[in-house]
Image (cartoon, rainbow, N blue to C red; front, side):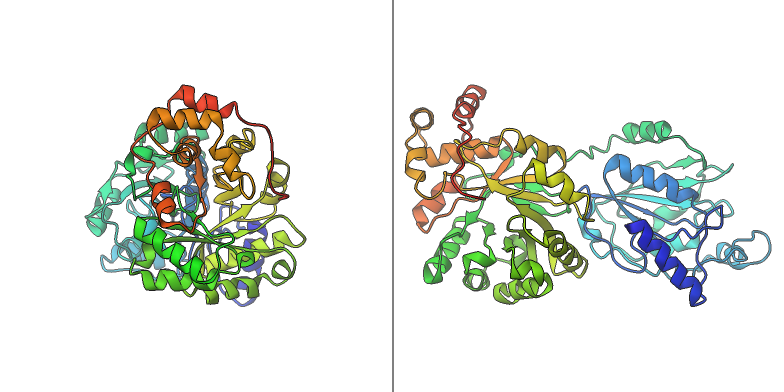
Length: 484
């Protein structure tokens, strides 16, 4: 789909008389976020930014992005280079720019969310022994402090030489790693070996939370595939209405909870937004999830998104989910993708999606869901679904972490849970929440009781043993408590 879009865009450029960089076969090679901003990092922290006019550097950049899971960003010149511009030693544009130390060719597109990336692979061809001056423009356009830059270049014969050293001064506060030169026909194995030698620790294991970094009253976070961090424990607001809802959210924020889950169907988005605005907690510290529902909202998703933004009135939505599969769900998700590109939503996800639905769905969309929110509790553990989603890079989240309506009391009184709770001098609810977190599942227990809310966020000063985790795993009955 993206390649088709790029081809159509290229044809339009030709029709209106704007030249474009071409690859070695003369085919247009403009792709990857032409003329605009790019979405947050696919791997949470890696960006592969590159400039390419003949397609050689682009080929290497695509391999690096595929191997690291990073996001691709093609640096596009505001005035594309023609074949005449690239005719070396002819006195053409490229020759003049490379000879002029002050040359800074304008860039047509930008990386709006550069702050979210930690590692930037920076690719370019060698022009007269140096990086093209458009790389200078790019480096001078952002703050690279506390980031790691890994340069790579392509050349038929020249090495990376002084080109990378001359770039260092443009981002002095970054950590620069030694660069690498590649030929146009470099094999994947060579690039893989280079990436391994860098030892960048680019893995983002979403199946094992760093629970030791949390403390009671402050849940740790998990890095989503969208590049944003989300607390691993929060407040669910299903069935909370009016002042009860507002007071519950206030109590949660006062207790240190920073993840709030709501939905259009809960009818409480306005109350949640009001509680957040009045809380005094900085907006950027709070992660808000909402959902749109099948039916009218899926038929008119753009309006549904605007309605959610208006009701919440907190500037942007951290994550929006499709509430469950239904007619026009792909269409609705694509509207949410556009809202991400417009900066209205930061991350996307799904609720009540399982193995049989997920593969077909993600084949039809562009942005991989960052989260799947399903019914998960000790009697319905989704022991196949959880690792399946994790392998796709999707975080799992449990609604009904205590079993849901009519079942909470039974689950909290389960003899196995009660015995483990007694052994740790904890409540049954705390043991269950700790079990969710230790298996890499985010939990959003609902409560309107401030004492229970404080209890729920206080599960970071103990841990369950492997034997206890196995005991709880044996409680699985495959017993679903709701129809989703």
